[in-house]
Length: 120
Image (tube, rainbow, N blue to C red; front, top):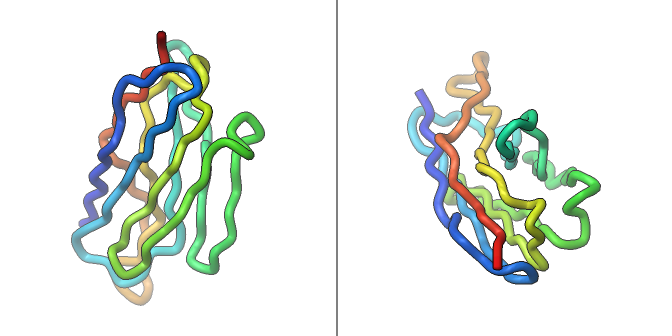
């Protein structure tokens, strides 16, 4: 079993910055990819950013140029630096990871989420 624990959410004014972190722990053989999704009230969960083990990165169009995803493989941790935050970035942010817990079995895991609120 694998656990994902997020940290770093909070309340920030428009134009401000926050950094989220997500640490994976448990039975980890290899992490294929880690990333962040977000879900605002009344909306579907959407991809924010994703980084794979080869360093390939994907961003949602709405955050490209403002958000930066990085990964520390030694710590099994992924970070999301969010700059120039806008009210429309307000949402619950969820960490996601695809993890092999053995050489032959993988699964998808989710964190419990951390709230980001952008408001003056």
